[in-house]
Amino acid sequence: MRLSRYFLPVLKETPSEAQIVSHRLMLRAGLIKQAAAGIYSWLPLGYKVLRRIEQIVHDEQIRAGHIPMLMPTLQSADLWRESGRYDDYGEEMLRIKDRHGRDMLYGPTNEELITDIFRAHVGSYRDLPLTLYHIQWKFRDEIRPRFGVMRGREFLMKDGYNFDIDRDAALHAYNRHLVSYLRSYERMGLQAIPMRADSGPIGGDDTHEFLVLAETGESEVFYDSQITDLRFGDRDVDYDSVSQCQSVLEEFTSRYARTDETHDEAAFHAQVPDARRRQARGIEVGQIFYFGTKYSEAMGATVVNATGARVPVHMGSHGIGVSRLVGAIIEASHDDRGIIWPEGVTPFHAGIVNLKQGDAAADAACEALYTALSAAGLEPLYDDRDERAGAKFATMDLIGLPWRITVGPRGLAKGVVELTARRTGDSEELSPAAALDRLAQIYSGV
Ligand code: 5CA
Image (tube, rainbow, N blue to C red; front, side):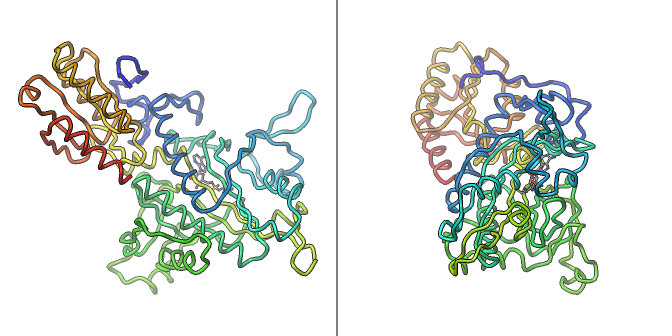
């Protein structure tokens, strides 16, 4: 993409309505624009990041054997009356009447709708296990939407639902989700720690939230500092293996890590030595639940088991806050000049800054790099505007592309361009071909 033809409405002023750094940077870097309280338009650059996050989520869900689909945003109230949640959900549910006076709602989550699909089409244990998921907009009429996309009213969520014959099989699905989530967050450049949590309106006994540690997080968390040393890495887990998934769960959840809802001060002191006890704040970027037969019993979602008896299926649901993640990643990765995107989610792989637009050699070298990067499967953002170098650098720093190639007549006379890492600021002079090789190598590992 050439910046002169793109739509990147960066703001010079720091918006006064934004209280936390990710919200400020998302507005300043032209990622989002507020449409109404807690509701945002995703401008082109923000939309690209959102799509990158979605793609990682899809890849990792499919790798785990889960099946993508798409359910609507609007739902009929009747299904929610069956589960009993139409009255229970309260003010957070946006209730709508259609022209015929029928009660509808903008879905805050999809347990009822998916259970209805399941009961219409699945009747035998032979069709299990089954995990279906979608990535769809949700609406929760939060009393105090704030912090931009972090606590929105309309937000994008991946929600997945497992259907299993019994508790053990459903717990394997729970563990499988935990593994796939660890892998997903790491690909986004994040450390998200599973913590024992409370299940709230979703229900059930077993639940973990995934938290990214950040001072601006809304959750208070208590944990054993050893947990921050754990990395999932590139290990190869067989998602069908009960023991492999179980052992990852044990590794990542055996140390004390809880949100304030389940925190137990006495247990914290008994289990964790003084030097390792931490109290901090975190951003909840996902949650997994096992709730057994809560919805299947209420809604008659049964299957015939191996002995011929009809039994309610065991279920769980599993959510990732896709739009919230954009804010969470920025909270975890920025400096005073702007965003620093991890390679896994960056909207463009590299920026090209032409120091002397209109100089024949500089223009030609930038064009050649642009073509070569694109041919290598990388997406460059070429700042081809007739602007001062300082302004171009400031824009690149603000929007946070992890790599910048700077091209100018002086370097070209020596046959080099400059490759700069956004995170460290370290620069290296390289031939254009070597810079291209370096970037191809960096991104091949992402
Ligand atoms: N049905 C279950 C799992 S599919 C469910 O709704 N879980 S949840 O309530 O925990 O939401 C899943 C994730 O969505 C949360 O972990 C959080 O990251 C994100 N989320 C929840 N509320 C909001 C909100 N108001 N704004 C942005 N993201 C949100």
